Length: 71
Image 1 (tube, rainbow, N blue to C red):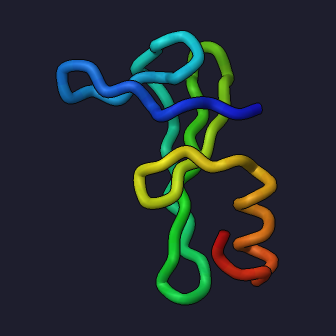
Image 2: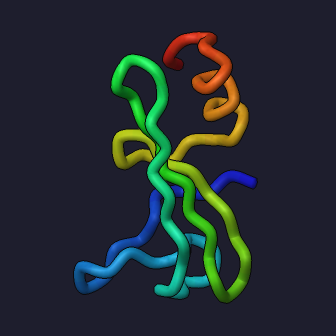
Image 3: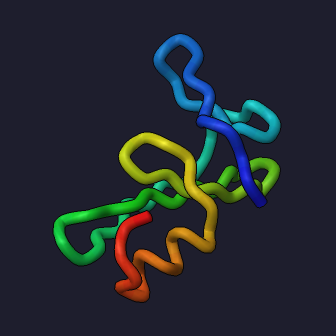
């Protein structure tokens, strides 16, 4: 499921699907000092990924972890 950029209102990040402010964030280090962040909303269970502050699709995350290079 793809989402647009995560909303920031009043300095607080919000779920891009329903605007909730309670979510889990996990930063995952990849090869070559690259990293991605996984987010999961605690209220609506929406899930999304970001790389360098920009939203990315799960397929891109899988390509990065498989060592297929940066997209």
